[in-house]
Amino acid sequence: MFIPAIKHTLQGALSVAVLMVSSASFVQAADEKRNVILIIGDGMDDQQITIARNYLKGANGRLLLDAMALRSTSHILTVEDAVSSSPVYVADSANSATSMATGQITSIGRIATSAGEDKDIITIAELAKAAGFSTGVVSSASVTDATPASFIAHVISRDCENPTRMSVAGDNPSWVNAELCKTDRVDNGGAGSIAQQIALGSTDVVLGGGMKHFQPRGADSDKTLLKMAQDNGYQLVTNAAELMSNKSSGKLLGLFSEHTMPTRLRGEDGRIAERPLPSLLYNISSDLGSVVLPESMRCEENPDYAGMTSIKQMTDAAIKHLSTKADRGFFLMVESASIDKASHKRNACGSIGELAQLEEALASAQKFAADHPNTLILVTADHGQAAQLIPNPKAGQAFYTPGHIARITTPEGQIMAINYATTEAHSEKHTGTNVPLFANIEGQGRVPSMVTQPEIFNIMSAYLGLIP
Ligand code: MG
Ligand code: ZN
Image 1 (cartoon, rainbow, N blue to C red):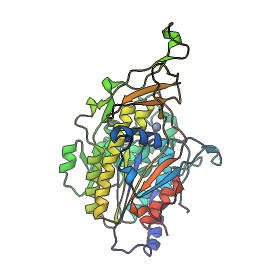
Image 2 (cartoon, protein in one colour):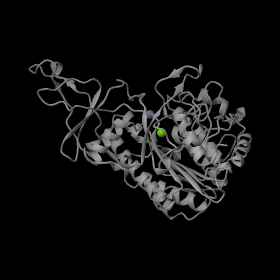
Image 3 (cartoon, protein in one colour):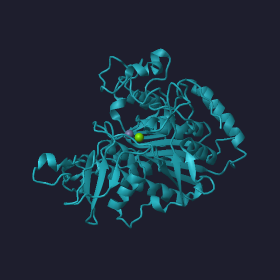
Image 4 (cartoon, protein in one colour):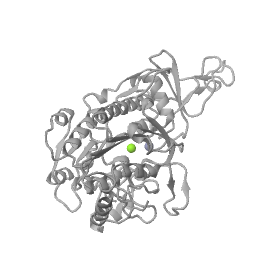
């Protein structure tokens, strides 16, 4: 299907959307509400799901995911920016979320913009909004992070999160490439940073972390982005109590942490995976090839998570808000972000706790769908991650494994060995595997046994009647 790509002329894109929707009215009766809830587990490949199932439910247990009506697989596609005909086999969260949000394949790091040409690509949230649906994003990352941003903003790079990050003179982390952001700067005729686009945008519900990205002053403005958002009609909430008691029917912005929200679980005493030590080097009396393994550990509550708003609470609030105000229904994207972020840090328990949170959000979505049958629930991942479930090396038969290993004692009393070995550097890498795609009963007949990631956009758009 053809989706128009219009750089910095969203109004133009929206009028195209309205045209598309008017012809779509033949597909969907005007009085029939339809909803799509897309739940993305960042980095949630089958290794992560299996590890979490073993810990949370036991080897013979079942996650809610496992009981969904339909299970497909999603093939991830990304390309070189300079040569968009050249495939790249491992993706990041920006290009992969852009695929799901727009139906277009783009290059790594891009937020709803096209590879090479840097055109804005209209997203499903924008199409749905223009067609009279309510829209929302929920994330346990900053709301400006790549996954949520790809549904509600357009920039050349995921680094362009706030006005400071777009300034070469800004006090920025070393990994930020502010120079790259210059085409999106307001003084160059762009729409500004991701945070500024959210603050000035029309998404009905935006909930997650990332308060720090709204504290700088807006580009060409005396006001902070937070104030700009409030002047644009957003009610601000900053903790779970405010979120739950909120009765406003206007636009809602919830920022519950400075940046990424902490994970619910962590390794015992904050431990993460550690490097096994070859005994030859450290214990002269041991056999060649035997190793000193990291001590096993349990997962424990992360003290930093205390008082944090859960993904379930954000999902419940978003569904309640969107379903009561919707005219035609709603589109909601919910992200469990730190399956990936914890895996980058070799924090297996962090990933497990984040997947437990995804399950709770799924339960909320399923509860709503039980009362509102015209609700398509899709659950998927954006890309694979580093963690691998490997045999637990036993004393006397231990083998050396490259990389780092976490030996988690499960509630079943067994040891689950999780290996991270994509790099010796600070942060583990994504992997290029297919990822699962689950759907509720509404997916039957709509979700084939294998999709490319951009086809997820087509499935959602068709369900909402956004495709002529
Ligand atoms: Mg993400
Ligand atoms: Zn990642």
